[in-house]
Image (tube, rainbow, N blue to C red):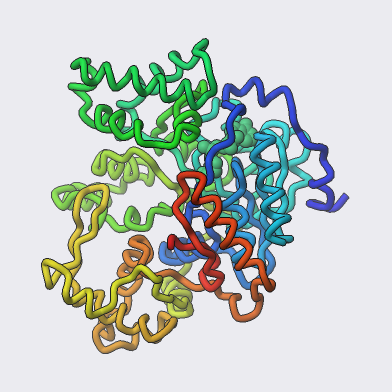
Length: 472
Ligand SMILES: C[S@@+](CC[C@H](N)C(=O)[O-])C[C@H]1O[C@@H](n2cnc3c(N)ncnc32)[C@H](O)[C@@H]1O
C-alpha cells in the first residue's frame, strides 16, 4: 500500500492508552493559536538562520501532534491551500469539534485522527504521509516518558529529510521552581470532588492561602508566588491541562537535543525569533561570556544551556531539522539569495512611521522582552515601516533603500524583530498561485469570533497572504 494512502481508514484509535498515560481526557483543552507553528513562520525563521527550508511552492504536509480542538490546524489549512494538514489527538471530544469545524467552514485540505501517539506509532506510522513540518505545542512536558518516546518515534518515522519539528516545552532553570506547586495541585486533585476545572480552582485557592500564609517556598521563590497570583485569573480548563496531569516536567535543552539527535534531527534554532539574536535576548553583561564560549568552541547544547541560564528561561519553542544528505545549512551566497527573495508585509497593529517618531523616548523604540525592555534606534526601523506601509515589499527592494544600502544584512535582524513584535510578517510565496477557496475565509472568521467569545482565545482573523491569522 503506498505511504499515506489510507492512514485515515485506520479505525478511530480510542484506546486503553488514553486511560494509562495519566493525561486528563475528561475536559477538552480550550482553543489556542500559536503563530510560531504556521508554515510561513517556520520557513522564514529557518531561512533567517541560514538553513534550507521546505518549499512552500510545492505540495507539502504539516502534522500537529496534540492538536486539541484543532483551531491552529484549521487556521493553517484554511490560510495555506497549497498544503495538506493533519491534526492528531486522543481527546475524542476535541477531535469531534475539530472535524465539525472543518466541515462547517468547508476546509478540505485537513484531516483529523483520533489516536494516542503510541497507538499511531505502533499501528500506522508507515501509513502517515512523509511530513515537511511536524509541530507540537504544549504537549512534550505534560506527558510521560513512554509518550515522549512515541513522539520521537513519529518524528523519526514521518519527518522528511530537511523537514522541521517544532516542539514547545517548559525548561530549566525558569520553570523548575514551580515543580512543587504543580505537584501540590496534582495531589490535591486526586480524590477531590467535581470536574477537573473545579479541582484546579480548588488547588489554586489552597496554594494562594499558602503563599499568603508566608510559606517559605513562596518567600524563597518569588516567581512561584507571582505565578500563583496569576493562576486565579486563568481559564479553569487551561489550568486543569496545565497542572493536573500525572506528568509535568521541565527539561534541560541538552537532553531534548540528545533525544532529537537519536530521532535523526539537529537543533536549528528557536521559533521565538528574538532568542536567535543574543544582542536582544540575553543581558548585555553576558555578551563577553558568550563571545568567549563561542571562541572556546562550546557545543550547541552548552551554548543553549548558557542562554537558558542567561534568560532564566521557563519555556522553549525549539526547531529541529531532520538531517539531510545535502546538509541543511545554506552557503553564505545561497543564504543571501534566499533572503533577497523573501517578501514582507506590514500587519494591522504596526504603528505608522509617523507614530514611531512620536513614541515616548523619541529616538528609541522600546520592546518588552523576557529580559526586560530592549531598545532599538527608531531611525533603523522607521524606513522599513515607511516602505512597508506603501504595500508588501521584497527584501531586495528593502535592501535597496538608501538607509540600508551599506548594510543589507541588518534588515534580516530588523525584520525578525518586527515579526516577533507582530508589526510585520513574511508572505506566503505561493499566495499568487493558490487562492483560498471562496467563502472559507469569511466562514472561518465567523467561527474564530464565536469561539473567542466563549473561551480564552483572543479574537483573530485569517490573513491568507501570510498563511496565518492575526489578532484583531
Ligand atoms: C495542552 S493541550 C495543547 C493543544 C494544542 N497543541 C495547543 O497548544 O493549543 C495538549 C493536547 O495533547 C493531547 N495529548 C496528550 N497526550 C496525548 C497522547 N498520548 N496522544 C495524543 N494526544 C495527546 C491532549 O489531549 C491535548 O489536547
